[in-house]
Length: 568
Ligand code: ADP
Ligand code: MG
Image 1 (cartoon, rainbow, N blue to C red):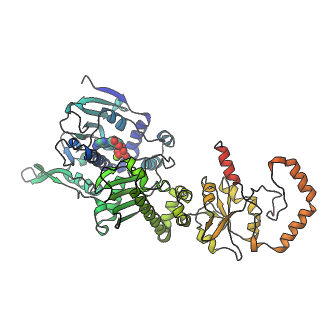
Image 2 (cartoon, helix red, strand yellow):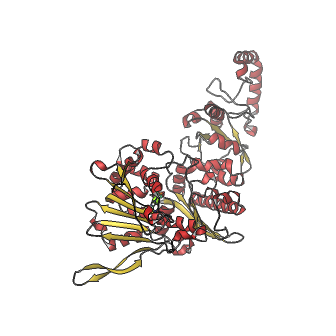
Image 3 (tube, rainbow, N blue to C red):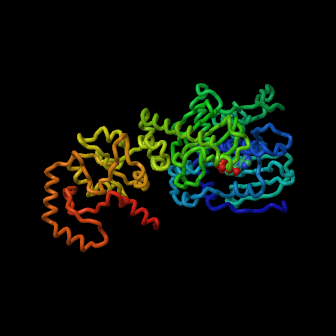
């Protein structure tokens, strides 16, 4: 048409499309799950916006998702009567990727299909997965509340020299919502079957809250084939999974639901599902992902909790429901008490939310404790992916500090490897007779920690020392002053007091040497001037001639280095 406009995809979208098609082919079935997931989100959003604007329903409040196919035209169509999109939304949502860190992420792609497929899983596949099975995709949509003439059509053909661009044009669309038509690639004809599509819906999207409807088919003797009837039927369970009793939900259902709420392509590591009763009543279904998302270090990235009030979707990314250090958790919280018109602003202030957050935090920490105790392998996976995020909790969440400290894993001189497997409890269990403190050393790298001259005396005496070399460690340890009644002590600070571990003879020896070398010490002090507070004789070193130590009350040297690097 005259008003059709050609537009180019953002460069990263082009890359994603290319990769999607080449790396995810063996997972091609996920396209349907992704499109249904989006349709369901769109219905949720409409229901929420309509809470105080019921005219958005346009007289049709029965939200549903419809799947059709046309064997002759070789198309599969997924449509919904959800919120729809206006022109700007179409262009931003389908032509660009808004997630921050996207550019950096794409810079990591290697061209190795296996590795890239894994990375893409971390990134999220979404709408573009349609192109795995289709070489042309047509989206017809109209936002709820707009006139029918304000419909928009978006089309992209991944063939020839038009790949990489799409077309947008205004259309007339009487019914609100979005209709996505996939023009199947050659070889995808098996998808043109009511039986096959039903199978995919039941396998991946059974948990979707809205009914997913398809045309009923019946066997036609004459034609010897299934033929369409005029009736429609719902092909999924269409109820809120989290509202069902736990013992009636299979692991497959929990997993499929996770992929929807978590916008994740991979399996969750673990989950917890509970209905909490009492002064506040709510249901929580919370998941620990199996892999870190690509943007986990971005503290502003989207948070994974969807908030519902009595099954009505309220908002995505309800960051108030989970503390920052548990930002990797995904899932649903459904409150029976919050008002339906609760806004982000109200959430900021609400005491009820504080209760919900405390409850969710406790649940997740409990789940992690349970994993740590009963499934070491899974806990190791968890720790590798999210350990450094969880550590932030030591500083952030004073109320749960001891619990979080119990979940920490460290490298130590016990095994002398970089594997973080030692708990503080393990350490305490191995303490030497007369040892009162938990000793640690911080450094920029594991090797620097392991080879620190500060360790010499500890190694000599067979005293275990925790080797901390992650970026957050220095900060974390600043908050972790004790565990189980034992204080933590840097081996690089002050005149390490080994207490009962110290041998009287050694002490005497040091005093004697200090006296003997008084002049030398003074000379060193004078030549170093302002740069040191004190120069003294030590028994800490067995091989190295000298080392730097921080004063007991000064910040650790590694922290000083970090702050300096940050320009402070
Ligand atoms: P995600 O669902 O993780 O946000 P997607 O790639 O699946 O990412 O979808 C991108 C965006 O396109 C969605 O966030 C949404 O805004 C929009 N969108 C996709 N499908 C629909 C739909 N059926 N109705 C309304 N908006 C949609
Ligand atoms: Mg999606």
